[in-house]
Length: 135
Image 1 (spheres, rainbow, N blue to C red):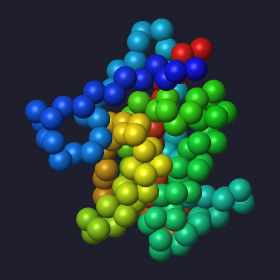
Image 2 (image 1 turned 135 degrees about the horizontal axis):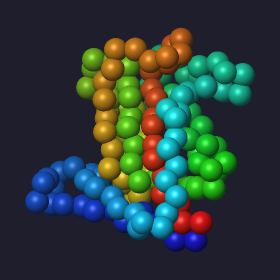
Image 3 (image 1 turned 120 degrees about the vertical axis):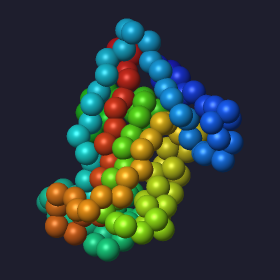
Image 4 (image 1 turned 90 degrees about the horizontal axis):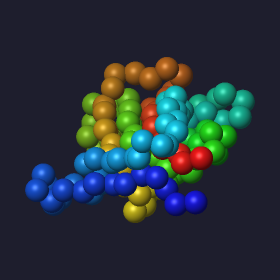
């Protein structure tokens, strides 16, 4: 089934930014609000200690599981918020690069934030998302 999400890009805002600035979904869709996806394995242990890229990838893997259980796919995601525990812009970009690669051409509106600390021991990355699904 085709995604209900329409991505809106604007070169009037910036032709350097590589994602959509806005997204819409029709009124007849079901919104899925996903809790922050964390870099945890099946035992609840943080993976990739000290590695922003590994943690971002695990967050996406876990996000895919939650989306599937809600009857959605990555293409149904309408927005994300990527939280990275760092004060170094390079670390932000490492995590962002993984997220961008996994979303590929479905470059949804996103917010990338450097934060002081996240909830789990050794956690460096967390990804929140909202999806729009046509049932």
